[in-house]
Length: 483
Image (cartoon, rainbow, N blue to C red; front, side, top):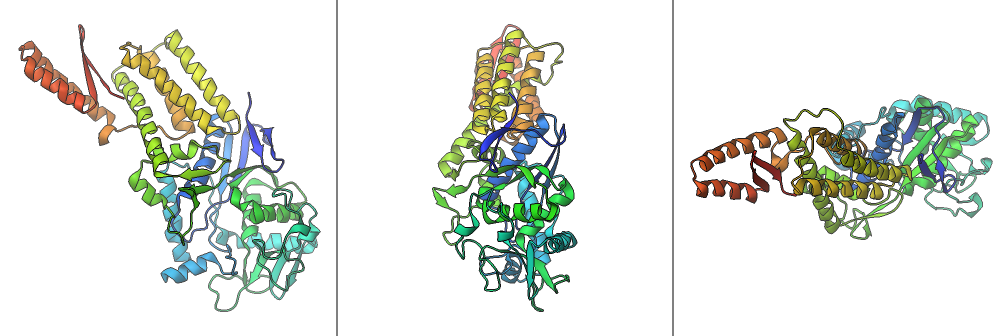
């Protein structure tokens, strides 16, 4: 089975075939950096992260571009979010941008989200936006009124092809700011006139002003990925007007298709309610990370299909924590048995068969529109099979242990990002824990040789309390972490 993706442009699953064999060009709408990132951002960017990770796992060379919106994102009042945030915190707008851009990347790094190849800022691409606007004016798709430039939706017959909305059905005020100077209520701003006191403003052929929100993505996506590229990702809530406007202005300017596949992520609620500052239920990523490990947050997000909604609850978060801990304990046990081994040769036939079966189940799930819930199920099922071997006292060969570890590293680590290269049980590095246990077992052996069974049993019981199971065998004691 080859990779298929659900394309919101056609509303159906399609085989994924990039424009250029072996390469994928992908753009994702990035954050507007006027505040700390919240758990909704985590859902979107973890989902996009796994898309990129899996494409690379399949062997594609991916150029991943994700913008930073630091100007032009207007509120319904017409006020720029960055300017409003700067006024709120009594700092310069670009100072606010620096604070929250750094905060955003700190959060993404903590969640294990791989950084984009390019993170262009809207404010650094004003010339490209102006040039695209000039092209739209020259081609008759835009018009200028008193220093403001608008895109005429009536001039682009395909407006609405992504969202399914028709121009004649759009009502005034439907998420598009209405101004009397517009020719149609749905016309959207490409360039806004800035009054002298407006802090963020640039010179243009139409006077001092600043770009509209939508034009930045078109200008930066085409600059770094070409006039037509493979994948455009983002949040489903932005399908209208943002993504719709991107398509219209880009295709009107270039005369070519914009993005070929639209991969959009569903919404997030908290205890069944949409996040809102007025309700006080906004959960910042930084606060979530104080309570939960990043792999558990990723697991919770990946336990729901990216296209569907997800409800963030404490109960669901605790379940994700328990699931990750069980998975990590299995991987720890495998790695600890491997610590002094030389994994040469091939894994045992039955082990290889089980690994191949679960790898197939995992990749079949991911090939089916990045179905992470099924992929996670395959990973947990593999862990159960491995636990049967370990708990049954089977002496797996070093080659088998290495093959198991590699499978977990690739599927759970490289693709899903929930199994780190190093796992530290109870805050202790694997190598340190192994060394400490070996020292304790050596002391216990001295007690056993002296027939001091009471102290020997006491050490064994104390280790068991810590989750370390000791088994006495003819060839000497062995130990494992209890799952």
